[in-house]
Image (cartoon, rainbow, N blue to C red; front, side):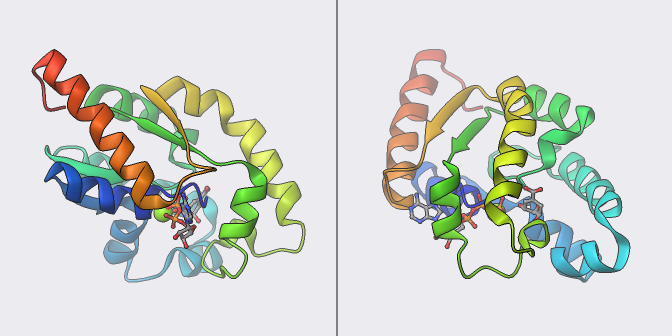
Length: 168
Ligand SMILES: Nc1ncnc2c1ncn2[C@@H]1O[C@H](COP(=O)(O)OP(=O)(O)OP(=O)(O)O)[C@@H](O)[C@H]1O
Ligand SMILES: O=C(O)C1=C[C@@H](O)[C@@H](O)[C@H](O)C1
Ligand SMILES: [Mg+2]
């Protein structure tokens, strides 16, 4: 959360001429509820089920830059899909940066509590192996703004695709 998947994904799609898609927004569209409302009314397990369904549907398509939700790596099926269907970039942010970027945020239910720092540290530790399991590339976002991260990623990916002759 706050690594910049949604914002950087949009800039990156622009730079690469691909379609920007955000899994959280697609879950919300399908449910007719915000992520926070789904958590509140149905619980996290239900949100995760909706997230998996949405991810599977979105990953049938080609030519998109998909910003996932931060917790989509928790599910083994999601991880297999991501590994099999995409070039996966793990955007990394340190907890201090996450706290700064999400200071005024009220849309992320897992952070709707006073001990945000502790929650973020626990999530980072618990999820690190899953991010490592799916990532083709890790990119540190702590010291660059969203447009600069996207520009650097676009260059890296374009170089890679020139070498391999593949677009995905
Ligand atoms: N590299 C960055 N530099 C400055 N601000 C950033 C950076 N990355 C993200 N932000 C800011 O942090 C906030 C959260 O970013 P964003 O929504 O893109 O994160 P996310 O990774 O999609 O989070 P989530 O997992 O909750 O969907 C936004 O206000 C965004 O502008
Ligand atoms: O890290 C997480 O578990 C989450 C991240 C967001 O993208 C949303 O998917 C939701 O707030 C949960
Ligand atoms: Mg996002």
